[in-house]
Length: 124
Image (cartoon, rainbow, N blue to C red; front, side):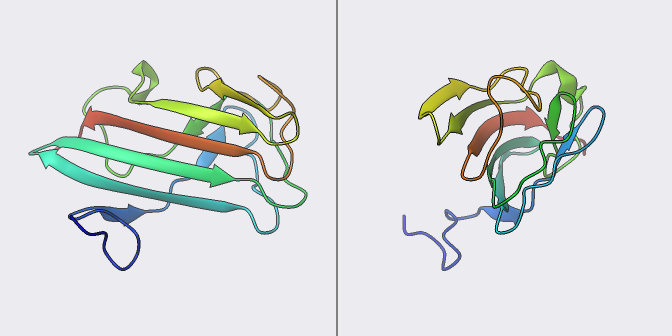
């Protein structure tokens, strides 16, 4: 199936994910981006993805990172609703996203990337 004009797959909806932290939320820096999409697979089962790219002079904030979801989940999102890969562009190195913070698994800098995807059951 062809992509929509906005680059999303058929039936996919746009959402802008928000990256927060447990103590002080990070900022993506000048030119940093946060993009995402989601689709209802069947009823309340949601497939989602989010991508963050750090721009110039990002502020990593402080604490463990959390990402907003496109719809409210039935269960506690702290249980995990997806998987991800984070990339340290300056190293270069890539890591599976698990508990990620402002200082682990590396020091965040311009060009670093967070890519996430998952499924979960949404409310109503």
